[in-house]
Length: 105
Image 1 (cartoon, helix red, strand yellow):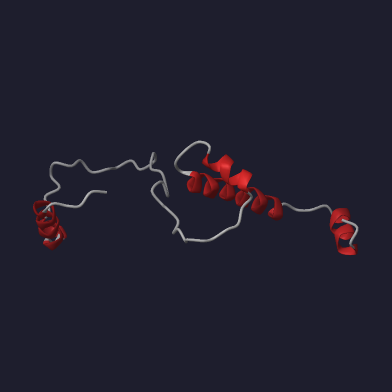
Image 2 (spheres, rainbow, N blue to C red):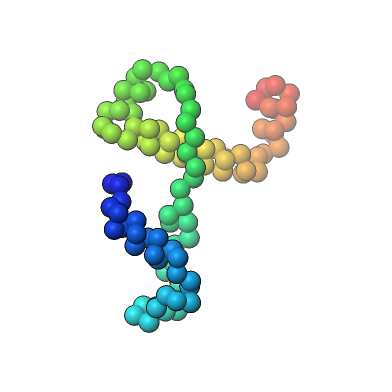
């Protein structure tokens, strides 16, 4: 994102100083039907820097498409997380659970 000009900063300060009652919304029609609204469309989870040791061929594969390999890795890990979270929440058959408890799983 580029740096704001002095005029843009001035305009932002002027708008921020206004009270809600002082803003004229007469040229904006009110939204009455929210059925098409998308919840969480612009939500972005907080990112946290980490250091991981990955195999060289995995890194090469992630970088093969060019820029955005970290985003790709995050997406892949998220899909795996969601998949395994669903799998863990499914009811398991008693025989599998019993075998695993005995160490035969």
